[in-house]
Length: 140
Picture (cartoon, rainbow, N blue to C red):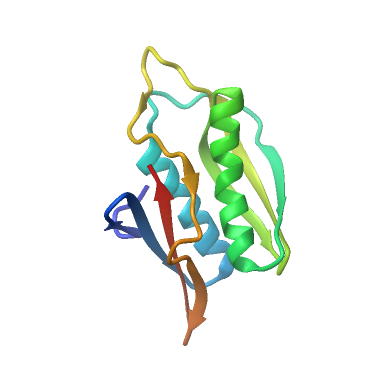
């Protein structure tokens, strides 16, 4: 991840981050990359075809939480980590992405932070002037 695309926010029992972008898609993509940077250090990326992932939600806040929770589920339930993501569309109730997934390799990969859940605590996503901003806290 390119430094400067997100900033870490410290909190009593959680950790969080804030991302900015010129579009909703850019904010969702940056949120995913920040999430991955916080959770894992992946030794080597495998060449593979991307999976198409669609996630639904009632509004942008729920959509953002569900979107990040999907990657947490893939890791916890299937041992898959995301090494690349391209957000194709963000609608008011659905996000569609291409995600490059691979098996977590305990020999070379490292879990940096054990995340239990993506929370609604101080969750924010919105646009001010020409900039979209999102703030997300993780239960660790």
